[in-house]
Image (cartoon, rainbow, N blue to C red; front, side, top):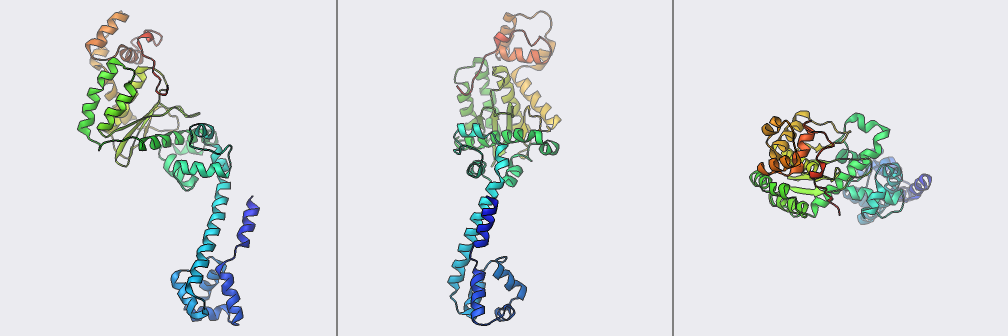
Length: 361
């Protein structure tokens, strides 16, 4: 395909070909043409070879010197550049096939983002449109460099992981576009965070939809997207055009993990800058340990008083855990998760108090 495209480029008729034919007809040298146009001979040679485009100003000069209407030169130049660009675009898409193979293209096709059956120029074009970028260079700048370490990006073993993470982030952006969100307000979001504690306690069937709706009213987009192959992640927080985006999965399938992740991401929104990207549980991301601990502390104290948690000792029963959760306005499963995390109880105990969740049916 590459040789065919190069041949097609060589066969294109350039406006410069007409310049050569015309000056030969007039027995005029390129040096003479340059003198009459007020250009350097090297610039005229660039016009003839196609290295330099024929501008409107140049077309008007050619009209005066060669007697051929300026519109002819303008149209010829536009036609040549369009055909050349299409060939170069096709060459670029051919070169993108290896990049496409790094993407989770089967899953993107299943989700309707791609229609091509296999990696190739058509799928490359669809993948670039999916990401909203002109080439893999811009893809890397927008969806790889912002969240992965340099060492991770250079590793051949991690290419598909980077593709999966980039696709996951992009799906979050596309889903965010479908959500109607008010202008962000810190005070409104703080009120929402207190209000949704009732969702934590009651864990209703529509908790995910209700959480999303209440956060949207405060100007925060909450988006649920499943994990993609080779890119396991719990959640991420970014700002998109002035709106915070909290993107979450149900990777661990229980309410204690879900609510801790949500309040952790909410902590990033309230405590940290708009330019930062925070991704949880992704090996290729180098987190700011101080900010991550601040987000952890925010989530922990919101879900259960940590001073009480640190004092708990002795024999804990299922009923005592239920009573504690009720007294401190949280869910017993969330309390169990905190106790397990802090080593107060083994990870094998009281898991029946947790609620299973499935965000995607």
